[in-house]
Amino acid sequence: MLIPCFACESRFRPDEYFRACHDYRRGMDLVAWTCPRCGNQDELRVLPGELGFGYSQRGRFAICDRVRVPGLRRRRQDLWLDISLDSEVWRVSSRPRQLVGAH
Ligand SMILES: [Zn+2]
Image (cartoon, rainbow, N blue to C red; front, side, top):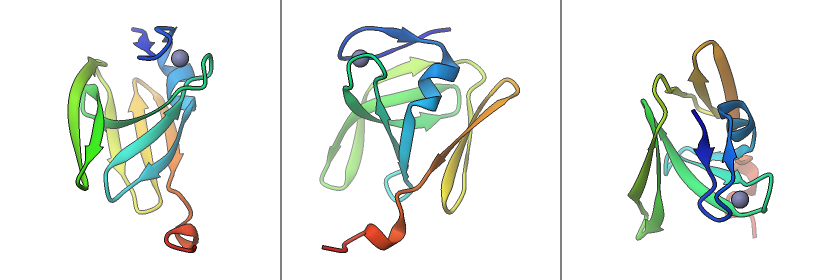
């Protein structure tokens, strides 16, 4: 099971891929992902059994591409998202709340 970067077409093992996730946006239910190879930044939604890629539009996230990741699970928390696959768990923290609208 390898997960691709849509920009450079590198493929990553789940551990490498999910460790590159950051900044969980709970309101939109999205995580940011920065490609360790090319630095491309993407946003994606973690869904049971798959990842959803797309674009944000008028406050909604439209999914265009799905990558199946059999066994993928997620648990939404207030301050982070736990992504789990088999026996591994990756925790993606939210953006710090005090920074929201602080400019
Ligand atoms: Zn890339």
